[in-house]
Amino acid sequence: GEDVEQSLFLSVREGDSSVINCTYTDSSSTYLYWYKQEPGAGLQLLTYIFSNMDMKQDQRLTVLLNKKDKHLSLRIADTQTGDSAIYFCAPESDYKLSFGAGTTVTVRA
Amino acid sequence: DGGITQSPKYLFRKEGQNVTLSCEQNLNHDAMYWYRQDPGQGLRLIYYSQIVNDFQKGDIAEGYSVSREKKESFPLTVTSAQKNPTAFYLCASSLDRGTKGYTFGSGTRLTVV
Image (cartoon, rainbow over all chains, first blue to last red; front, top):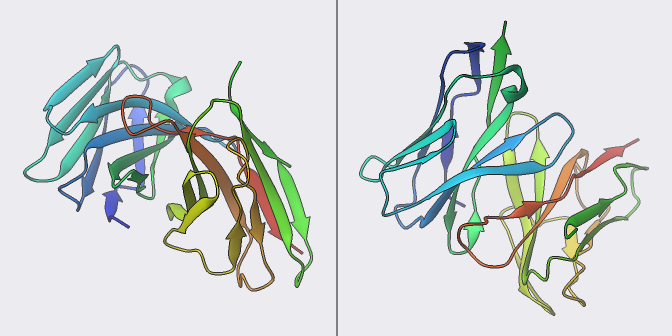
């Protein structure tokens, strides 16, 4: 499968913005997704971006895509305690998703 | 409400035994997937099926088997050949690539005792 790299941990103060970064290797990825996982649960789709877009905004979430560098980021504005979770970047290629190890976001008061 | 159901939530298996994990969806999705999740390693694809009666190996298929006799169901059997089966197993389904991504079940945690 495709290689997907994410930093493992991010600590952010409540009310600040969080930025989670992701790099991937397959330039033919068409859709790139962000998923959220809370402890002991499945994955919840947060947002996605199509490969011909540079940016997508969805309420507090902003996704940036640099296709040339194969770099994807997720910005969460006004981070809340309920945003504490593991976040996965998942590019799609050939109808299959590949996942990074996930970034554990901890929100501190 | 439509969704994807995995059962059981927790499963204990003795070494040398086969065990089957259930995955059922009522979303009318064509494609179904099994992933394994280990701490610090993210999700790895075990098997996937894009249509009834057809399935393909993913990246870590050794020691696992699947069947797809019905559109709604995609059970995963963890055989005694799987050397390190203790993990969190996630099933997912999708209608097609695109704006809705995959829908995931809530997972089954398998522990070998």
